[in-house]
Figure (tube, rainbow, N blue to C red):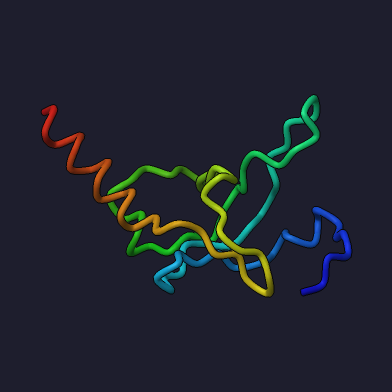
Length: 96
């Protein structure tokens, strides 16, 4: 594994997939906590319409918390967002 530090901007344009191989979106920007000097989110655009059809993401896309990131390489793998969306949706319907 190459441990050479990379520029944060190298993440922009990479595709994001769930750990189950479902395309989620493409990284358009990075959300930083400048005080702590850490990445705390990935702003995604070009979203998978099948995943976000029931959500109003507006024109901006979504921000995925960086803690969901499992691996960074040619693509970025995150924890299974499909399961997270389903559980959030089920909880919302249970409250209705």
